[in-house]
Length: 289
DNA sequence: AGTGTATCCTGCAGGC
DNA sequence: TGCCTGCAGGATACAC
Image 1 (cartoon, rainbow, N blue to C red):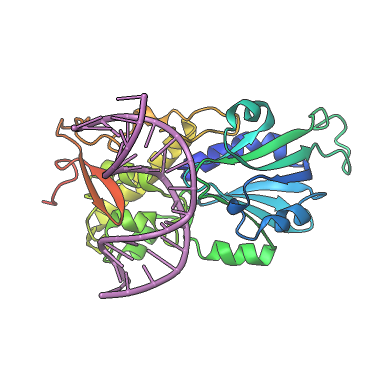
Image 2 (cartoon, rainbow, N blue to C red):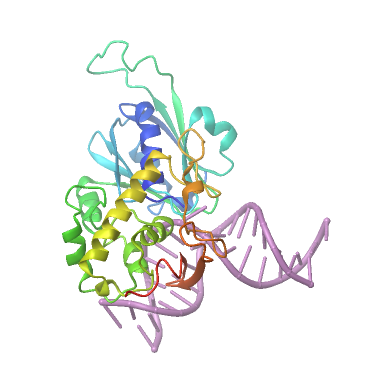
């Protein structure tokens, strides 16, 4: 489900209510989303303050006082819902965190203290998602296995070209590999390739510098546009308030097999490789000249 | 270094 | 209506 833009949208919705709050209780309903077992969270979280919320690739990272990190990966159908919405919207609660607004410390006066206690629900129909409590060191090691953030400054067209030049893997598979770029999933990989006019099956290293530049630009534009739209809701994705993302209407190829290409009217094709569907326009993303 | 396959799990759409 | 198959924004482990 959630790729970089969806996770970023959830993060932005959560931040005002969650940053600075203290975790006062943990309720585990579905232990199978906790690879460390239910006690790691039940013992490790209560009493701790959430210092900040961050995103790395498709992971939502709660930086905790103490220190440590609560790392949430939403899998295919994971949601993080804030109390108001969650009562109604959470049909498959897996973990509930009780939060108290930060009353102690700095004394920002009435600043954030007008907030009432809240519940943050991790909801997940299929339970492919995970919540893990990591030390800073464990998190650093985990983060090192992930590729660069595609929206960061350092992710340049040149860097992308260098990274691609040794890989024989199909470019769509390359983009999905979190060790190579972090945060790209099947929707936005396909959309970026459409924008760049590149066949998703092309071996990465056969892209010429002009194509890599187009891919770099296409990827960043697609991701930014999707963040602005609040992500793509096809079925399951919801933001922190339970609302939908509106990027779905702007998808050019993903999920549009048989429909007309907006640019040339050819029917969009669907092919399966690497265990996933790829969508593309056979004309706009056809052979190189 | 690649690919394909299976696995985790549930729900929904479509065909008959 | 029911039953079946296939499909799904992810990640990983395996054999070849």
